[in-house]
Length: 459
Image (tube, rainbow, N blue to C red; front, top):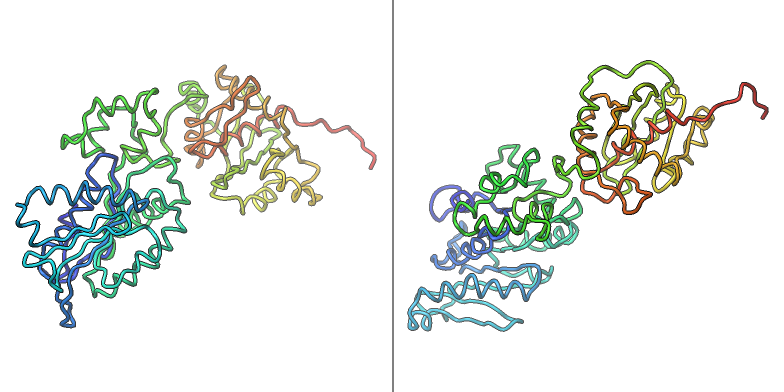
C-alpha cells in the first residue's frame, strides 16, 4: 500500500502520482500507525523544491474524529515510538514538541529545530478553519467513519485548495474502518463509491484506493474468511481467539463484528441470517422455474420507508399460490407511472396504506381507470398477510417465480426480521431493503382476499 500510495510521477523528488490515498481496513489492522508513518517519513526528508524553484519546508497535519482523540493517537503512535529510537541528545537538539491539547505539534530538523526549513507535523481539530493551513503539504484524516457526507465535503472544500498550492507535492491520506452506521449518507460511503469507481476505471492518477473488505457473497461467520480478508491476522497483530470472542452473540455479534473487522458494508446484499424465514423452505419455493400461470392477477406495490428502493409484485391464487417480483428499482419516483402502465393487466392493486404508500394510494385514487381496483392494506390485514405468507412458505403452499429481480427477493428474505410480539410483521429497519418481500406478501394477500364485486351496482 505504501509502495503504491507514495509513487511519484517522474522518479525521486518529483510530484506525487496521487493527491489522495484512501485506506479502508478492519480494526486493529495498523491503519493509524500507517497514517502516522507517512508524515514522519516526509518530515525526515530534506526540504522540498517546487517546480517554480521555491524551497519549502514540510508542513503536515493530522486529525481524527475530534481534537482529543487526534492528539492521543499522535502522541502514542508517532511521538513516543519515534522518540524511543533516539538518544536524549539527538532528541533535544533536533526536536521541539508542543503537547498541550490546544496546541500539539512536533518540529523536526536534523540540524537544528529552530531552522526556518524545519519540518512541522501539527494536530488539528476536524474543522473547516483548521484544514485551511497555509503551506500544508500533507493532511491525514483518521476515522473518517464518524463524518456525514456533507461534513466531509465541507472539509474537502477547505483542504484541497491548500494542498493544491503545493504544485503536486501536497497529499491527503484518509483511513478508516467500517461500522454498521456507514450508510449512503456518511462520508466514508462516498469515499468508498468514488474509490471503487477509480479502480473500475483503472485510474493511475488522482486517487489511490485500498479497501480490505469481505465480498458480498462470502460468509463473515466462516473463520476461513477471517484469514482471507483481515490482514492483521496474517501479520500477527490480531489473534483469531479475539475475533472469535467478538463474533459471538455475547460479544459484538456477527453483524457488528463483520463490519468492524471485515469491512462488511451496511446493506451488503449477501448477509445471510435467515432469522425470520427458513432458508431451505424459501429456496425450495423458488426452485420451480415454470412461469406464472394464467388467471386473475393481483399486483402490489411497496415503497421502502427509508427511500432505498421500491418493488412491484404480481400474484395468482391457486394450488399453490404463485408470486413474482416484476419490478424493483432505487427510490420511488418511478412507481406511479409503473403502476398506471400495469393497471390494465391487474384485477386488483394492493398498497400498504401506511407511510409512503398512503400518498401513492391518494394519487392513484384520483385516476378513474385505476381507483376501482385499489385495495388499501391496513394494519390488521398487513399483520395477517405477513403471518400467512411465512406459513405458506414453510408449508410449501406458495411458489415464487425466478425473475430478473428474484435475487433482490432472496436478499430481502435472508435479512428479514420480525417485529416483536405475537402480532408481528416484517421489520423494515434492517440493512437490506425489505420492499421485494413485502411486495410479494401484499400481492399474495390481494390475490387471495380480493373484494368481490356484485353483478350490478348503482352509483
